[in-house]
Image (cartoon, rainbow, N blue to C red):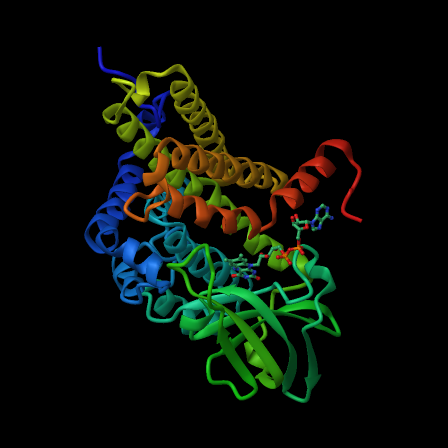
Length: 388
Ligand SMILES: Cc1cc2nc3c(=O)[nH]c(=O)nc-3n(C[C@H](O)[C@H](O)[C@H](O)COP(=O)(O)OP(=O)(O)OC[C@H]3O[C@@H](n4cnc5c(N)ncnc54)[C@H](O)[C@@H]3O)c2cc1C
């Protein structure tokens, strides 16, 4: 009898439709051909592979779950499976795709005017315009309501002042979605690269997500035409709804990294002999491998159900928080355990587990920290807010 698959112990694969399997295969083949051979060097040298966006665009992998405007219009599960294949390779690549699709393209698709959608979305789907999403500020992270960036109406323009930091894709982007306080509350703005008063600085020396570009955005009396306001944004909830889209993708993405770590630890411990026996035959080693397989199986079931809820438009933000929080935590735990089981080799970039571990530290913090998601779930089940 064939052994059960350690990464799909309960056989979720058999529920996939042909379209969903094809979406996953497209992402898998893209990774094998264009990314895997170069990812370790890209991580070590600390740069993003800038030829990838247009290749991904050509394959329908950007804005994949959006409809119209040159987007592939896939369902939620297909989108999740794509994110999983990207992150199985590297969280930096999945971060690029999440920001492009779920934060930037979704923001325009959901809150933009028809002109804005036609101007930006087809080129973003092709990877010809790269977007970034500016919410976090140097002094404002988990509590974005307290943001200092502001936009004052002046005739047919807004004057934008402030800064945003830790912004994924910023150094390689042509378009920034920027959230700022106005006389009507928090609104979203489209700020094009080259707008006078707008500058971008690259963040160097990251020890995590090294294959992804991150930067700081500065706005000094930056004049934004009125037509660059995202007209349907109203309040922080508009920004948070974009985050919900991205967090959904992360819930799947991190499981790609976790599965890669389990697979690497399994292969390694089955072949490495110590005390005259394969490492995988020792009880303490098996306990770790079983823990990883069990947590990955549970997390995949969570993600699968989340996709059903999203597809039927019944999903609540706290349900997305639970999947993002749990799946990121177990992925980070799996990466740490796999790193351990690889012994000294585990700290080398010749293997994948430590790169995934370093990357997942960022994923643990961004798109809502582990604590913040727990507070959202806590509020949902108790009725009490513990934020302040
Ligand atoms: C690589 C990377 C890429 C990123 N990309 C983007 C991007 O594209 N766009 C963007 O806008 N932002 C981005 N971020 C920023 C990210 O979203 C923030 O770092 C995150 O929201 C946390 O904010 P902070 O770093 O200011 O931490 P803080 O809010 O200062 O939190 C520090 C610690 O305190 C805890 N804490 C805070 N408040 C509470 C509380 N009430 N109760 C209990 N604990 C609490 C946190 O959980 C955390 O452990 C990125 C970050 C990284 C590392």
